[in-house]
Image (cartoon, rainbow, N blue to C red; front, side):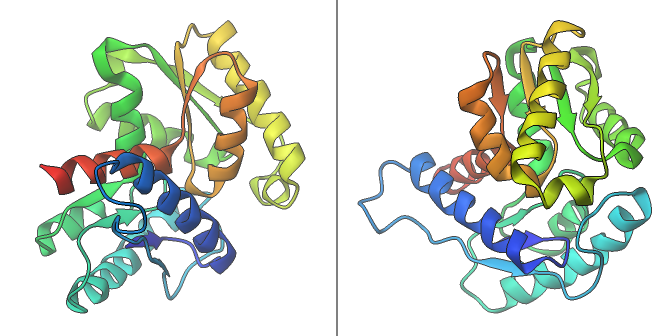
Length: 223
C-alpha cells in the first residue's frame, strides 16, 4: 500500500503507477502478472502539497491512521509512505508488524551507499532545514554535498510539468558542477514523473525516491 501524505488524488495515482512498475522490476522472480499489486490511498485531511514543516508534521497522524486502516484490512504486505520527509514512518513502525518504508530514507540510503557523495534537488525551500535534519538523523551527513532548489513556487511548477523538469535539471546540474555530487536524489514523491525523465537527460546518476523505496520493499519482502 502506497500512502500519499497529501490530499491530491491525482498525485496518488501517479505515484502508485510508478510504484507498481518499480516493484515489478524489483521482484523479477515473480511470474508476469503475479508480483504483489500496489494500491494507493490518499490521506483524509491536509494540504494538496507538503511544502512547509507545519504541513509535514500535520501529515504524520493522517499517515498513521491510513496505514492502520490498510493493515487492519488484512491484505497489506508492506506500507510505503510517499513523501520525502517520511511523515508518520516512525509511528507506523511502532504500531504495525508489516514492513514500513519511507521514500525519503530509502532514496537517501541508496544514494549514499558505499560512501558516494550525494546531493538533493527539490522544489520546496521551506523544507530545506527539515531535509538537512533528516539526512543528519539517518547518519549520512558525511556524504551529503548539499541541497539545490528550483526557482518558482512549488505549486506553480507542479502545474507545469515541462517547466518543472527544466528547473529540476538546473538544480541537478548545480549539485554536480558546484557541489561535487556524484549522485543526485530528486526530493519529492510528487516529483516522480520528473525524476524518471531526468534519468534520461542528466549525465549523473539520479535516484528517484519511489523506485528506491520499492527496491527496499522488495528486499524486505524477499528476505
